[in-house]
Image (cartoon, rainbow over all chains, first blue to last red; front, side, top):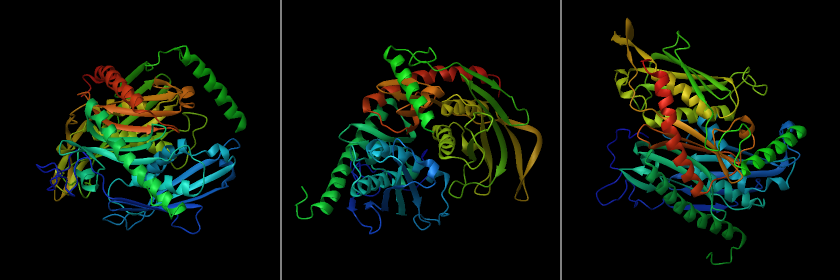
Length: 245
Length: 272
């Protein structure tokens, strides 16, 4: 952020972005539910150039045992990037960034998952970033939500996520990698569309009070579009004969 | 464990009952932060330092400035690194050992507020492009924990940076050499102020103390700069916010940020 010097034109005179999108357009999103054999639930998402695999295990015994809670199940999320997922090789050990993202994704999912129905158990969600292209935390959250639903865990709502931001002085939907590096603001948003609750919200970059509100509203539009794709992914797995409307 | 959670539940219902009458457990108004006390230059060995006390939460921030190699893709900018640690003497539950996710989050949220505001003009901290730059390290230690470490840590770090001085180095034979007895003010462009709010039930409270912190449904930290723009956000906690609540929070962060910025300005005046 902070407008790093770059040759890339983030927004041309016709309001078209570096990857050919309009300001209020997301990248292409495809989600497939139930892609892993051993996991209780799973999903694969391609969000632009992001390729992410989500696997859910449980509810299962908690190890270490002292972490178990007699009142409710616990949710554990690991967000992890493969060494080959980014330009320069990433050290495979979990970085501080990955630990923080794991925490915010956990907190974004928790309100949606009825963990209280599974006391003394753990629900483990593993998010593997095979390829990163900006906006991985949102894409990973989208996949996680579908994978938990695929595992048959009761949920209050799906959590859908999409970033909004600012580049070339315009508010933009779904910030890509270049826009993240050279743009003015990046605001990842996670949302429970039926409950109207924002469960993930971060920002780096500068926004006025007015832009802040508009940016959230723009991001929520993106979230709602992703929500339809998430529902379709589940429908395709469980009702393959329907025409997916 | 079970006993603890029963106490937490009782505490929560007490706090919530009070909020319904418009009161808080320590007698503050809902939008009233605890008194902030800032002492500067508390560690003379550091290049800048401050102790921030927000109610009974206390954090000491020390700045160290030293030459370093630039980040590979940022050869024309100095380095800013912010860390945080909860010392074992700060709270009975604090333990030594590798940092837990909540402490990592603390350091990263404080770092983000300062970095994204562009508070420090890092482009003025280059000794030789792509080779050698000046690094400014803000290390923050929690010495007493009564909730809302995010804001206390941010105030301590910002105050310490505002009072910090940068020694002079010159490049000789491709190596930075310290020029004794010369230093300059750290190049400052704006003063970021973080304001953390929590939601309990339908109530939004500012600067939750530890009792309140432990029963928050959700929290949000919003940092604003001297122009009143929003520069960083972090939502946390196990529930969410509605859009209307988030707009209320941003307005609170902007108006309270203005007042707190004045306190920090006064405490650090003449410090540079």
